[in-house]
Length: 343
Ligand SMILES: *Cc1c(COP(=O)(O)O)cnc(C)c1O
Image (tube, helix red, strand yellow):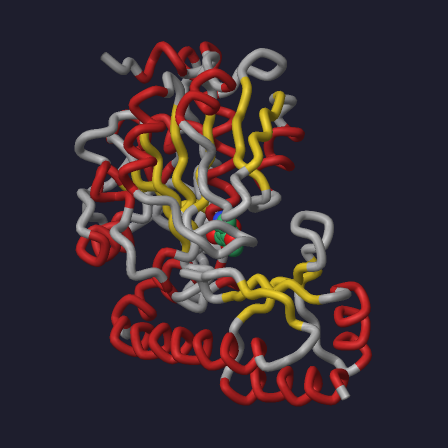
């Protein structure tokens, strides 16, 4: 049986969480003299709900996950950092990533003094076979799978995720930052059967709130309790909570935007493939395309000269640029400039 206590850092198990004024008294009252706030209203003079229960109620309905299995962080980057702090003893436990992938796992590992095991994805950016993974991850700790993966754009099948999690004795983190652009089944559907699973999602991509810094972690109530215990008391601010509640109310509008981005993704792919210096475009379930050029550095520099910034991923995948799907107008500008360069 998977026992969450056995893989949690001892100091985290033993510590007492900070008890804020807003978490000690939760009842109804008229006069609030418990938190040393300025009593004059600015709409922001009160501390936010430390557990963001109203927002979690809406996310629970939206994602079909029970409220006690939801953590909200200051971006999913905060959840990533908290997972290291909770489940990796510095200098002792390890974290595993499959490269190329999102850069923050490596940065968080370094900040927390946790050794990183980097296992390369296959040529088509699939997970290597289970034997390879098992032999390199015997010690447990944290294991990250990004799906759809950044910067490659492809997804990992849930069946593979199930297999990896069953063999792994630490925590398996599925980062689904781009899942809203993907037709595939969500990993939250596995939460009931896999106790060592954490699924990350975010309001930063499809939901258009990158500036609000709101990330979600879905996991067992035991794991969520630990994350809540070690997070800063007021990690999500009132303005961001309000912005998220509004965007959830307008979720049909978000769906329209996602559909539009997916149409543009297809259009951009077809148009880019017409350019002679484009070698290859990888399949994408996300809101970007990983495009291989004859000489990516040269294209990158020329695009910047025309005021168009894409992400240079040459150091991760040779001669590749990662191009975010913009508005129809932005994408057309990109295509016009690339057509000019090709002449
Ligand atoms: C963009 C992105 C995130 C989002 O991070 P936030 O802190 O929620 O903005 C997480 N994971 C991956 C793989 C990403 O590309």
